[in-house]
Image (cartoon, rainbow, N blue to C red):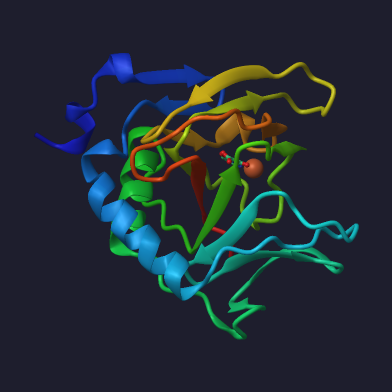
Length: 212
Ligand code: MD6
Ligand code: FE
């Protein structure tokens, strides 16, 4: 059975421009978590500075040819990790295949991400409403993988003031975000306490992009 037909329709939810694939990452979670551990060991999670000079509450790192960085100069993608002054770790094959097949299910063929941003949330942290607009080609989707404790994802509209709908994202859930929603505002509400068997009281989110 191929990946497309193995995914039951009950596990898929379509909101305009957002395809939610419940538990899609679960079958490969052992490999994913091993590879995640290796990436974080090579390029440690760190709290970057916002352009306004505040430390982000969420800790980040990256893998792939390009990594997402933030500092006084702004937000952008860079081939060099500014802390290690070295290229980011390569994107593990398990990451690439997961993102590529999830995008395929959502109707984006040949999605070839060159950047994977890793966000780590502790209880009490959040990600305010934002748009993802540092990538070059907005026809390419973003694939987002949730691991660890559950989060409340806010899915808003084109304007910051549009009232968001909420989606609960659990360990193994994948969303493919593109098309009409590509520039919609979104965020993560303040993380509430929880405990995951492997990741403890943290949530890790992987976002895959074609950034360059
Ligand atoms: C998060 N996600 O889930 C934050 N951005 O922790 C994002 O900011 C995001 O999930 C673009 C596309 C999908 C996402
Ligand atoms: Fe985002």
